[in-house]
Amino acid sequence: MEQWIEAREMREGTYAVVMHRTQRTTHHLVVYSATFLARMGLSDADGRRLVETAVGLLAEREDEVEHDLDLDWMVHEDADFLIALRERLVESTTV
Image (cartoon, rainbow, N blue to C red):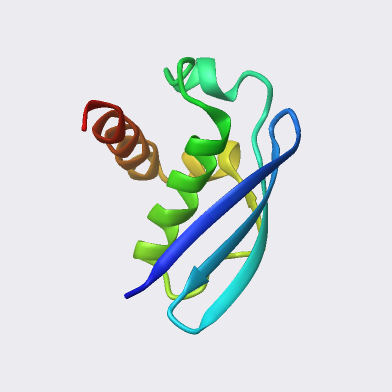
């Protein structure tokens, strides 16, 4: 399946995201708090890469990705999401 995700920082912790999957393009707003990266042990992560990775992970798990995404809330609701996100970020920096 052809897929690409592009995140554009609007302000610190807020990103506009365009995701294209096969024949469909969707737009999303992704936010996270100023303390999110440090609290999650991801303080070295690039915000844009973090958001693109998070949206890609959600796209693999769900047919439909919500328009508004709050990463703080998502890791609060689903600890496995944080584990998978960390793994993806580590994999992409070691390749």
